[in-house]
Image 1: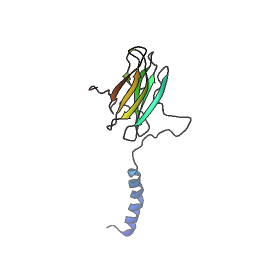
Image 2: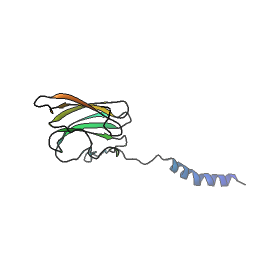
Image 3: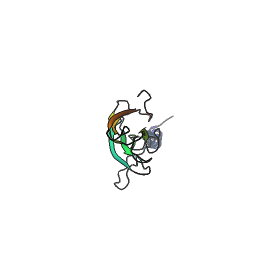
Image 4: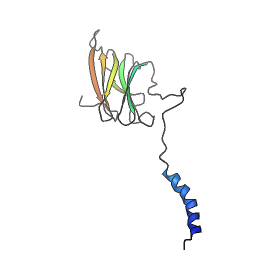
Length: 146
């Protein structure tokens, strides 16, 4: 038989355990220390002219031009809402264009599905630039249909 005294004791013991179990899942947060920032790409040589757009899920996609392999090429990286780089994407970013010559000044727009469409100036044809574009999916895969 449960008495009022027993019920009070049971609630006093179980309630804190139940509330502790309701705590949300542990997750990383964006760094808030101005001396410790989120590394998006730390590859050798220079990464320049970053641009950013929302991924529509609380995170972002960042693009830049990158000198890691000699010449400037276009890369992108996804950062999740939790403040960590998306592990499905390559470390130091997904190469979107590594054609001969220089590719510079990327711009991007969200595709509405967690990915982005990226455009840039491209000098693969010589001394004058052309404009190229690529679609990168939320998964970090370059869209094969493009």
